[in-house]
Amino acid sequence: MRTAEIKRKTKETDIELTLNIDGSGKSDIDTGVGFFDHMLEGFAKHGLFDLAVKVKGDLRVDDHHTIEDTGIVLGGAIGEALGDKAGIKRYGSAVLPMDEALILCAVDLSGRAYYSSDLSFTFEKMGDMNTQMVREFFYAVSSAAKMNLHFKQISGINDHHIAEGAFKAFAKALDAATMRDERITGVLSTKGAI
Image (cartoon, rainbow, N blue to C red; front, side, top):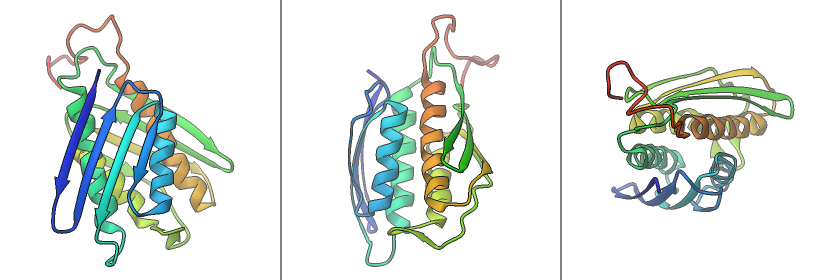
């Protein structure tokens, strides 16, 4: 089983997270930010990952540290669960429709962090989550997991649909990238390491 359990405590957040890459989509999420919980539940369900997240954050300040630090821990868990990445497809992509929104996500589990996104939001908040935190979360995940992560917003005007489309597209792309292929010996790289 490709699993990870990470605990991270700072003056701003106290996070416990478990991840099973080879799960069935079960989740138990409590970050204190309702909209963010909804996004992580969708990520787990549509990626078929088992994910448990408990966060105590300094929400009296705002949602920034809670969401960014959760991204750091999730990215670390992805990297830990995949280990040496032997036998995985490495690349994954998805084009996901969410009503009027159409979001493309592409992932390369390259061992190199890079983040690019043109997701565009109209309003400051979605429920109790600041729209700026979508970028900060995914940037933190890509950095901690050492992955290339790209988003392209093909269409969309509803902030909720754009954000949910991004989380679900990421789930589908990551699921594809983490799939094992029996034809791959070692890692999928001419360098022999990723």
